[in-house]
Image (cartoon, rainbow, N blue to C red):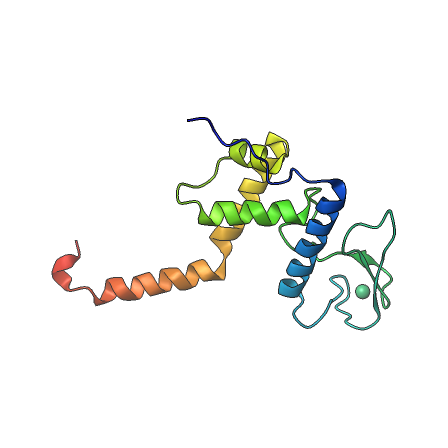
Length: 154
Ligand SMILES: [Zn+2]
């Protein structure tokens, strides 16, 4: 059977911009549930949204320390040129595909270079390994294992 070659991001630049805005909104809601916080000085007041042709999506400026930032600062997305929308789809694929996802599959689906896809895979795997959720799941599994009768253990 031939592989499905449809790309998720077969969109116009205008549509891509809208998708990216939604992804930034989603991430901001997760990282800053009570509104934006400056990652440089911790200030929450007088944070300005920078708009314009050259401004990256979600670019902000702190009124206290005057530094610029986006929601990516301090996350696995920091320093990456890959749009957040592509990162979110990569995370979804890596967390939901039962057999996992290869870097070459991500590269084709997201229309990014193999090198970028490989870096995404590595960062997402590291983040999954560090996740507190994983710790909680391990604790649950340990609890169940402890309740098994002694004969079931080796
Ligand atoms: Zn600041």
